[in-house]
Length: 230
Image (cartoon, rainbow, N blue to C red; front, top):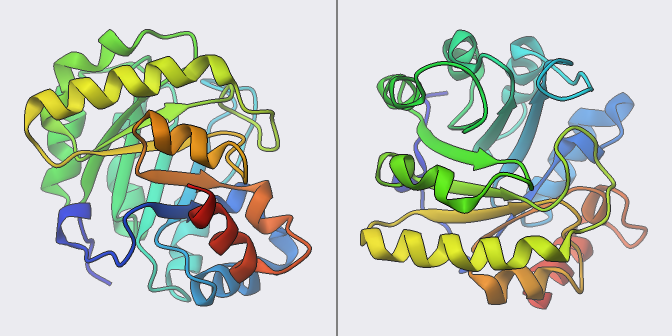
């Protein structure tokens, strides 16, 4: 499947929901991905962790390549890596459509973003909860999406940090000032109740992990509940 950038995609919803497979049952991963796709997900959020930038490991390009074969959803790949520039090509070849890197990571980020675009993907920039919004200013006009972490990156199932709401609002203003179409994504503790808070602050892409994959009433109902709460 050819890589697709966010600006090439047609979305039906004003507020997009991106279930995070970090919260899925990996023994039934294909079934879970099929379930959220049928259930109305707009994107599939894929967290990549190296055990160095964050204290956890997740998956590599091989897993992404395998799940790519069974899904038509756009793959929103979040690289929590110390040196993301070393891995953008393998993940693009594996089927990523969008690749987000951390402002705190090593390397020439402007060059990394350019290379992501050269590979046919859209690019994103993100930051840890303790990093100020202003750190993203040099990269805003280079990317198609900004991701705000409302938990410390590295583990799923954490509680939403309300203290990050002003940062979301600040980045929304910074994005609007560029005059470009740049999505504002929020990841961490997004569920019914918090979805409306991040949407009110300016987010238009909601990453939902446990609230979707851990839902007892099914994926479709969980996705609908998050979207309608926003």
